[in-house]
Length: 135
Image (tube, rainbow, N blue to C red):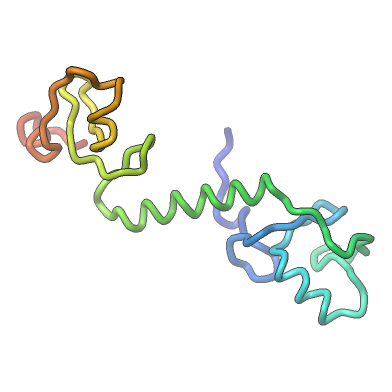
């Protein structure tokens, strides 16, 4: 799957990540509030990008784009808030332990999952010191 850049997820009106995106018949998307504001200032309901007239007063939500934006923001927030700490891809919890059986870092939720039943664990920093490798 191709990666999505931040600029692909930005509204052409406010230049920020889409919030509640809607799509026009010309296929251009905008934040719902940005489009409503744009139309309030203009005598006609034209697309802010291609100027094509829109026949719908209330354009449909662009759910696929909304989901992409939410996932992007969640990932960015996790990356920013975690700093140097890594998060579990399954549970979005801090990786605090190292599963010696699977040789992978795990969170406290993973510790109690069926996947790691009867496994041996060490604190992640202790496992790092004993192996000498970066996690």
